[in-house]
Structure formats: structure tokens, C-alpha cells
Image (cartoon, rainbow, N blue to C red; front, side, top):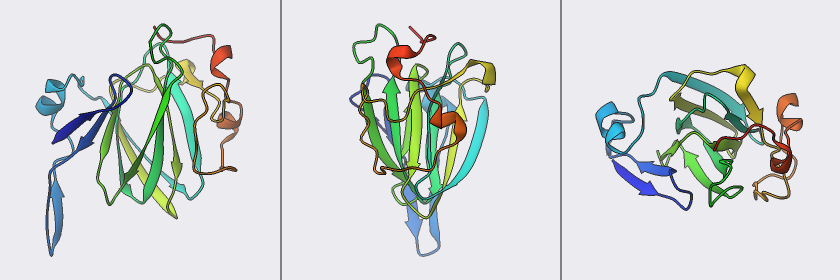
Length: 179
């Protein structure tokens, strides 16, 4: 596996070794000792979502009980976005985006302290992620997906949003932020 540092400290883009032939392909998507060697803690929970084109989920984070997430797409394609919400960080409020797809097989490691979301680019997408802590709904926060102070450049102008995501809070108004 190739681990690539990105513009936000702690975020890793992961390119697995893919072995393919006329039958299909094989790849190792997670190996605890290799990932721990890159500073990624043990992962405790797996999640899987399916969404249709134009769906935007996020931008979510937990505090306390921050979750690191190892993300990949097994069907379709998404534009995946991370925002640094660690108060005091030199990159606080900065964001970056990456296309993850079944075709490129890239994975992304998102450590605690980052709000995360994605927008579906294909007709549908299956999105899988492993988490470093369990889901604690009472500690979940939603950063407003289109906060002008953050300025994420989403590939859709009128996404399909949940009620929770429509009620996201601008970064300047979030009360509970990790250090």
C-alpha cells in the first residue's frame, strides 16, 4: 500500500496494491499492523451506506469521542470532503476534497478532529468506512455543508440533504470543537 500525505496534516490518501486479470481483481483493503505502522489506531466499527446521485451527507464529526475514519467506495464515485475543526490548529477551517471511486480504489484516512462529508457523483454509490471509536449520537455535530467561511467547492449546487444536514451550524457558531 502507498500512504500519501495531503495538504491537511493527518489526512492520508491510500492507494492499495491491486492485482487484476481477466477474472477480476484482489486487493488488501485493511491490515491492522500496516495501518498501525502509519499511526492509524485500531478500528472498532464498520459502516456502509448507499446513496443516489446528488446526495450530500455531512459535514459530520463527533466531539468528544472523536472518530477516525478509514473510507472507501466499493460501487460508484463520490467527492469526499474534510474540514479541519480542531480549534488552535494552523489549518483550522481549511478543507480539501478527493474523488473516491470503485474504479480508483483509493481509500482515505480521516483522523478525529475533522468534519467529514461526501457528495455522490455516480447514479448510486456504496460508501464503506471503519471507525476508531463507536458512534455516539449525543456527541455528533454537523458543520453547515455550504458555510461561506469554509468555502467548500461542491460539485453540485442543489444537493439532496437530510433534515439534519440542512440544519448544520456555521463553523464560527459551533460551540463544541476538539483541540
